[in-house]
Image (cartoon, rainbow, N blue to C red; front, side, top):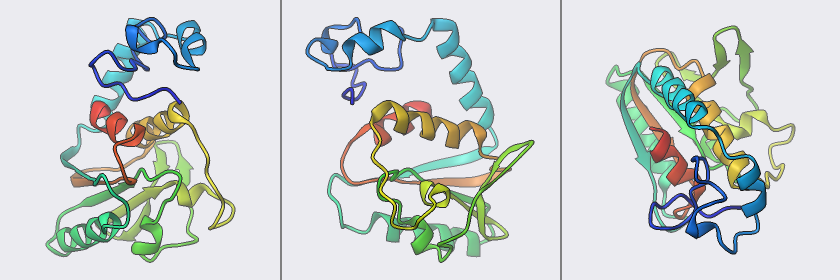
Length: 190
């Protein structure tokens, strides 16, 4: 997978410079990126799509840690339940794509998302608490998801543009351990 878009000479995947920048040298995806660099107008459209789709979300909170097993998903679920108990409309976006645990934390393992004319419908834990996760898309609960950066980024973008969150006071983003594509992409998109 291409390294993250760091802005310091690193990967510029997802920009018009992808595959052409100094940081692309030595990357195994350089030729693929160079041949599929998005046009500036496409990038502008994608930015507008995300801005439009998230305009009804008042606050966005990213929950992350550089280390695994420290309780990110537990913290995320506790914040979500507390905010919803206080009457806020809360959405949770589980971007731990390869190891989604949010459905277990929220007690909704085995549920599925549905697609409607207004987009993907998140799973409702409570009337004012909704959740989207790759776990809801898997045929088996323990199925492995092995995706590289661009595919992960694409799903995060879909979560932000195609999920019908409705009006939210808070969107909590539960992330995987480390500082990988999921973190950088989510911050860039938001």
